Length: 421
Image: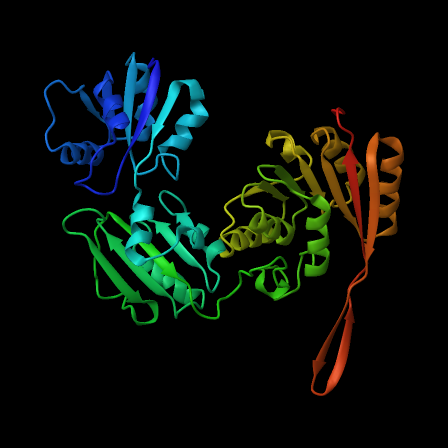
């Protein structure tokens, strides 16, 4: 196994130079590992490859890397593009190996180069990687006024990006395609999305960065918490069906107080209103939406795609049995219990992390009493409840009409620190 791994970023400029420290790391390595393109790039940067340079090994699949590192002792160099720690292989390696074994040598990235060519301040942009990721993950970023710098692959070519903008009612957007940045045949294309003919068969180099200036009315993804009920896919028509309504949903999110990288169970998720909203505003959290009804499961998946929330994991089955294979939660929301609230409370509380929070909704007197009784039997650091009675009014045809929603009680239970099970 390699004693030390040098991760060397190759700058986007094909005719650029390696820094002295990075070059020394390469020359002193027992082997240099990189993709075919990276090795060719290295040769171009150094003009010639002296015979005394270490042997070079072509990496065809990232999965091979661990085996290759295990087969070489001393110091090994791994080639990467630009900054290895920004949507690069550096993150993977830093999770697998201790920092004492790693040395990172960053360089100018294609993202920085694209912003430089277009005169964009990187801090004013949102960087999105579609490389090896589902296209629908772009949806969460489709908000008017934003500028996206997009790392693409063969499944996200410019014509597809233009089509996504049109479907999202952002047809006034501008798409910049930056091809082969740093090479002699570098090209920058400016495309008006609304006038982009997707049927022309126009092709672009595989090596490209896309930049989107999002303009238009937009549809569905708000800039602030509170997805409109009518924008969610449900089993009961626009704004109806098995979802927590916006006013209640926002209160649930406030009570859960979800943090970065936390794991949340949404038990009895219905059509996924809470799970979707939570995932949209907490992209670093992982939400397990637990539901057993086929049509509601379809709605959860549709909302996950519509809002680009890939951090929602759909769990098909009856709780609590189906939760046996799901990791322990930091937060739990019980929205639906199918008459099994006492069983669900005991099970979820046992699995809940020390210091975690459980929020449950109750719309019947028996459910409220069940939750109050549970609080008396358990070691709970803090328990509180909030009653929500929403009344909505609309002005139509010269008249105000009012609709009262069914009252909901929300219980928030905090598990004591150091208590397990």
